[in-house]
Length: 140
Ligand code: TYD
Image (cartoon, rainbow, N blue to C red; front, side):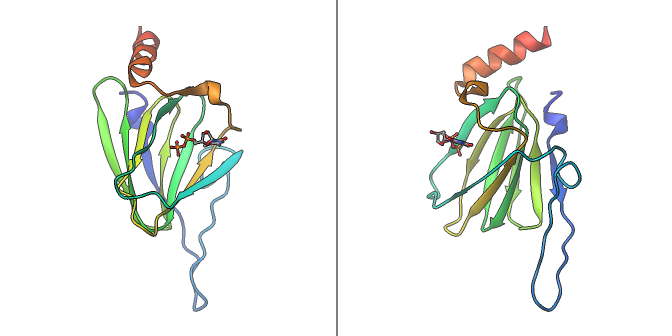
């Protein structure tokens, strides 16, 4: 449960005026970590499920800068929560060691992901049973 409690929606200030909207996200200010990496996901069909992994080290903030998607988060100990990302000025913070699945992408979905680390495939846990085992080992 510990890491599920750290998952939270973030609401970023909007600096809109007659010219349009502007949202600013600064590392270690609006985002609860220094940003080392950004990537974005688009063109995923509605029936696609992405993610399906946990990260031993990386923390993430996910923002649907266009369109909509959903994120299911699991703690490996029986708890899960679903977050709807449908506004360019809101995001969800995911700490390390939570399982995540992104799905229900709208055709116009552009999902921006900000990460606390550079990419390292070795810190990914891609098997759910392995994740459960590591969570249990950590709790003992
Ligand atoms: P993957 O983790 O499966 O994407 P998602 O979690 O969105 O479903 O990554 C797809 C491919 O891209 C995989 O071969 C690893 C590579 N990749 C990088 O090289 N760097 C990165 O920062 C990320 C997120 C993925």
